[in-house]
Length: 192
Image (cartoon, rainbow, N blue to C red; front, side):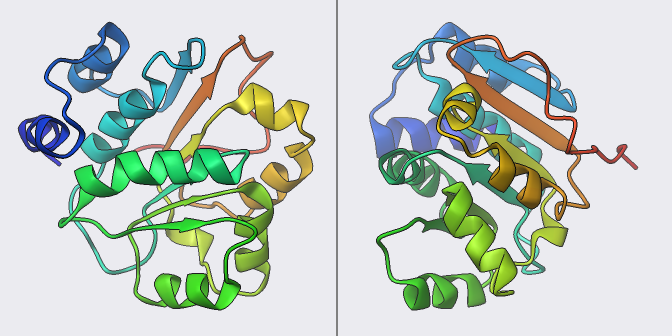
């Protein structure tokens, strides 16, 4: 997606007239295969990775999920969804998956071929295991609050999801504290 479109939608849908330094950097740099956004809560990481995620997408394909965002809580999933959806639409369909929400409703939204999925580790893994979500088409993975996910004990679920992501070319981690290392359970495919 073009940066101009993203910024225009940010102003119109979210009321954001100017970007914070981290967001501006993500809007302007050539995106590497691995990105770490390390900053405290409330620093604008969600919009920063949303800008990068949308810039990495070349157009809706209708051929499966292209971007996956993993967040540790339902509240954070909804917050991210509320940021991503208005910036992505109408070009890209976005859906949210989380516990306490109807699985059947989520399965129907996945059947409509969304381009971007935001979800909690457990619910994402449930959809993958029930084959309502095909992870093989995901090329961009965002793990939000990576440090918090490890702290809450989601490493096993993230590993199980990561092993099913066979086409990931770009990994973005956000964290309030520096991670020891990038997840070794997610091999990145080289750009063509």
